[in-house]
Length: 296
Image 1 (cartoon, rainbow, N blue to C red):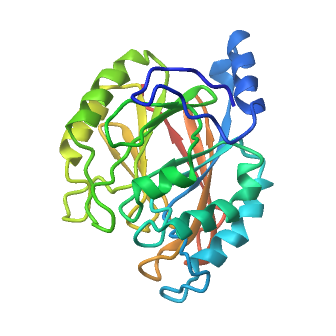
Image 2 (image 1 turned 90 degrees about the vertical axis):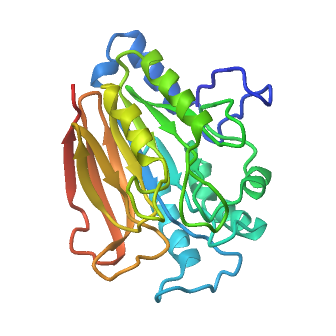
């Protein structure tokens, strides 16, 4: 994966765990004026909730076994990268949670870059102790894990909505919002996908600064979608033409109507296709493709 050195408070760029082939291929396309036709394929996982105890069970699901089952499938799915969109750990972000996750996803780490967002059940210090490297550009935002990485003709902005470990609600905070407000116009016409863990709603357990975030995203027309997890649900919506995509959980669902699984996304400059891969819960929509067009 191509790396670009940028100033950060740590004075260095965390380097990718994947190979360089994927991003180098995209760079070659761009140099030939073909970036607008490139497609990037990414696996989107969320709420994997990996425990220290492999036998841990919730609602009849074993998160450890779920990830163990799908990791080899994702490794062979022909995708260019993967993102784990928060709640990597089971409840409190224990060191053993991250050690197990790293071991389970080894087949994926060995083949592609894996970007990760932090959720309300994660722990910053324990996460950083296990994953000292991340793909893309780490941004200099105090006490936040914010990454910008390339996905074919698009950029992916991965925000940090974690407020406190094992506290349900999330918060971006002023410093992260100010950075985002300054960064988005600087990207020009490059399409941007924004990822974060928390649901952008008005419930007590949602993102507490949702309105301020949406006011930033919706006025920047290069932002095409906001992709999140947290609710363990799967849905699509829009606000002012910007897509809102709630991806399902890997670990378990909260009700039997929702799938347990991951999403195979194919991103293009003009839109994207999202295919649900449901291996548990409600599997009625397993294999269904949802095609979206980006706003102009």
